[in-house]
Every structure is written in structure tokens, then in C-alpha cells.
Length: 101
Picture: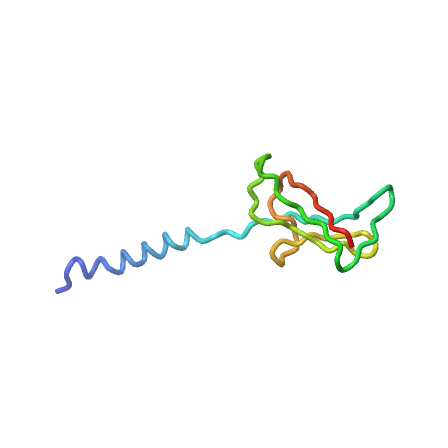
């Protein structure tokens, strides 16, 4: 004869699997951001050491833990990436930082 405790183990195990499956981390939806950096009406000449970085403005409620960034191309264009994924992370207010070449 099977005890009640032994017969309940598979049910408890399956219930635990269902609960854990629902607790998985969802991948953050990224919003594509690309454009051209201008200064005095002309595109900025970029290069391998010229960057644009978006720092989330926490004082305005943007709690994004990532800082999307991009290299500015020779023609001034950029395409942001977040943790090796193309996109800009969550939508929100950010401070734009530009680094010189």
C-alpha cells in the first residue's frame, strides 16, 4: 500500500514546476534608436573612439539599469546597443553624453 505522503510527492513536484516556470525573468523589450549627431548644423565626424551614451535620469523616474551606447561613425551616424543587443532599453528620460574622438 502506498502512503499518502508518497502519493502526494508527484503532485507537489508538478505544482513546484508550474510555479517556478511562471517566475522566469522576462527579456526586456528594447526600443531601436539610431540617428546622426550634429554640431553647428553639420554631422559630427566620428571614429573608433567617439561615443554616444544614454545615462538614465533617475531624478526623472528612469530606473533602467543599463546605459545604452554606440560608436559614432565617420559620417556622424550611430545605432545604440544595450548589453550586446541592438536597441536602447526601456523608454525614459536620459542624459545624452558624447565623447570626443
